[in-house]
Length: 196
Image 1: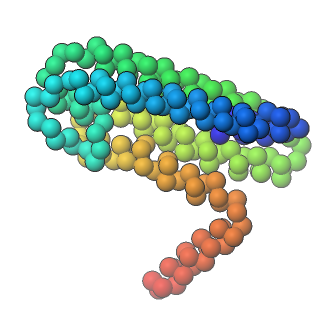
Image 2 (image 1 turned 60 degrees about the horizontal axis):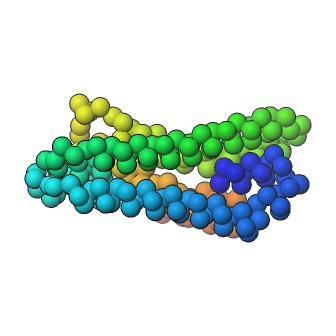
Image 3 (image 1 turned 90 degrees about the vertical axis):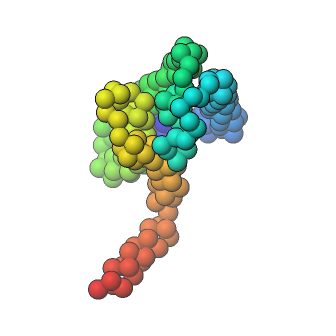
């Protein structure tokens, strides 16, 4: 999405040639392949760990830190290498997003029209907000010190970075649709009037 926004705002005349169907397929294939490789590494490492502290995790899905708490093995090296790969992969994506948005904001701030600036910011800021939510809560979940342990906090943080961003994506990308905006306003007004 960051690349799409970058090309649309910074190189609008070249959009058709830079973000064609071939480029979209290549970007999707790279994202799926890297995600699949990351998942296979973690799954293989996780299933190879012996569990001696039961098999019930304090989450609504199995996360690596929760499973590592159940392991009695000292073979964390493989899992740490997998986590390093994940951090490297995530950091690479994060740097790419940040650099794209720096270029976007530089281009937007040079625009003479306030209406153009508003349109560009309204296109970019929802995506940036969802990415920021996912990255900040994910970093908190995986990088918090062990002394900050609370099953409730872990559950809320896991929910925030794994469920909320995918749930918000369809809403964010369709909010530019006037019919959807009108429907949401009518729903809120109906709910407001119903409760009065």
